[in-house]
Length: 392
Figure (cartoon, rainbow, N blue to C red):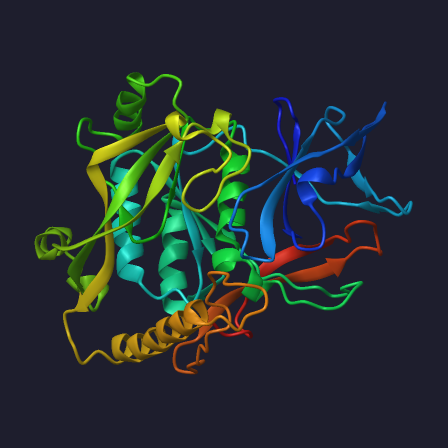
C-alpha cells in the first residue's frame, strides 16, 4: 500500500481471487486517521492481467486523510483490521528507472552484469525483484547495490496462514509469479520520483539510437507524440557466447559474439508514470492503443539463447537439464485441457530439483491473515527478509 501526493492519494496493490467476487464492482471501505481527523472512503478498483488465471493483480484507489498515521479496512460484516502502508518515493537515483521482473532460481549472473552496466552507462537505475537466487550470484549483486548501480527488492511467494475458506494455493494460479504485481509495485514506488519507467526482463537490452542517454532518447520519442503514454519496443531474439568466470567477462567479445536468431517475441514498454496507476506484463490494457508509440528501431535485444565458453561446465549443464525439464512441463500444462481452472501461464508446478552444492538465497517473511471479512479476507506479510534455509 502506497501513499502518494496526487489524487487519488492512496493505492493498494493486491492479488485477488477474481473467480469468487467481481473486484472491479466491489469497493473496499478504507478508514484513514491522522492526529486531527478521520476519513472514511471507498476504493475504485482496477485489474490488469489474463482472465484465465484465478488470481489477478488488482489496484484499489481512493482518497484518504493527509499524512495518515493509520489505515484500516472495514468489511461489510463490521470487522476492522489495520493494514501496513508506506510512502511512495519522492527522489530516485535517476530520472529513468528500469524495473526488472521477479527472478527465481536466478543463476545468469552474466546477463545481470551486462544489463546493469549498460543501464548505468546510459543514465538509468535498475530496480530488480528477487524471489530466489544462487548464493554466489547474490553476493555479486549485493556488491553492485553497495556501489549504487541497482536496488534489490525481496519478492515473496504468497501464503495463507489462516485461509478463512476452502484452501486454494494462489501461487500456481497467478500469472508468471505475480510479475504484474511486481511491476505495479515498482510503478507506484517511483510514480512521483522519475520521468520514465521501463519494464524489462533481465535478458532485455536496449541501446539508444538517437541520443547518448535513455532520458534523451525517450524524450525524443515522445516529442512527436506529446499525448502518448508509453513506448512499445519489439524484442528480437539473439544468442551470444557467455563467459564462464568474471575474469573472462569482456563486453566487446560478448557483443561480437551476438547473432540474431530471427525470432520476434512480444514486446516490452517504457511509460510516462503520470498516466498509470496499474499495469500488466506487456502493457496496460486500460489505455487505448493509440496512446502508445510503436518503436521499430532500435528494438530490444533479447539475449535468452546463451552458449557457454566451456561446454563441459557442470553448473551450466545441470541447470540446462533442470530448465529443459521445466520448459517441457510447462508445455504440457499449456497444452492440457484437463485443468478445470483454464490455462494460467505459470511455471510454479514445474519440478525444480534442489542442488546442495549450489546453495540458494530465498525471500521469506512473517505471513499474517486478518479476520474473516466480507466480501474479502486479507492476507499480508511483514518482516520480509532473506533466508538460506528454503532452497531455490
